[in-house]
Length: 348
Image 1 (cartoon, one colour):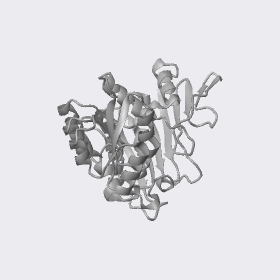
Image 2 (cartoon, helix red, strand yellow):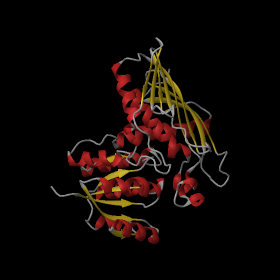
Image 3 (tube, rainbow, N blue to C red):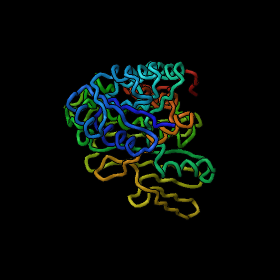
Image 4 (cartoon, one colour):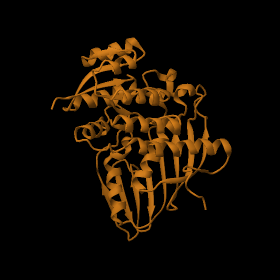
């Protein structure tokens, strides 16, 4: 079997830090094309990787040169480009948040179904070693019933790592649609759904722009979430944690507390109510810091789903459920109400 031919659409930071190097590392794929509306950037990246440059994604998709693409564009283009690729019978790995509305997400899922091609959403938090270990511990039942959690994802903001600095699309509402909540918050809604094995059904939120006076999207959000089993917790997403990153999650159970990415030396700490403490060193979480770990496992998982014809580990349906929590948070802030994420769930 020959190597899978891949193209990357959008050559900004996430493509440069993650997708391109990870495809390059993967022995089962051959990078053949990149695409960016900025011709200079497309050309520069194409030369670096020795591939063909495009400025029009439609031209790339119609070339028949690629079997799979990563969609690494501003958020508002995720759905149209992913749908065009799926309709062209090309597998799609789409960056998060997968879309800017539930309707767009549904259309992406439908396009994947119709084409029979894979659609995976790049929620890399599921693949972090401490998060995978925590899921095993929770599923084994050894911490008993889960009562509550708090999770946060924050750093100083995308201007520090985006190739366009303060001019980046992240800060422009018509391109990003949503700020820190879409950039960081959606990662944590996906993580909590994965760890707890339950859907989040109710959301209350405050979503503000307080730190970035040049942005017209949110940069600080705090949400209260409730799962179908009655677990309640908080989620904070911020671009205003100006002295480094917070990526911690704490889960409060009947027999233990799990601290994930909370202790600098130990990526998972389990504090049992009987007084025992277990500390795990499981490798670093991915971060945008210089020299940080650069395998997010997302590309690897996507490639494997195609090679072995399996469902991707984060399907379009999964991506949509994580997006719906974020959409509910925005609605909660706007209406000053608690919002249900699912139309079919009665709130008691």
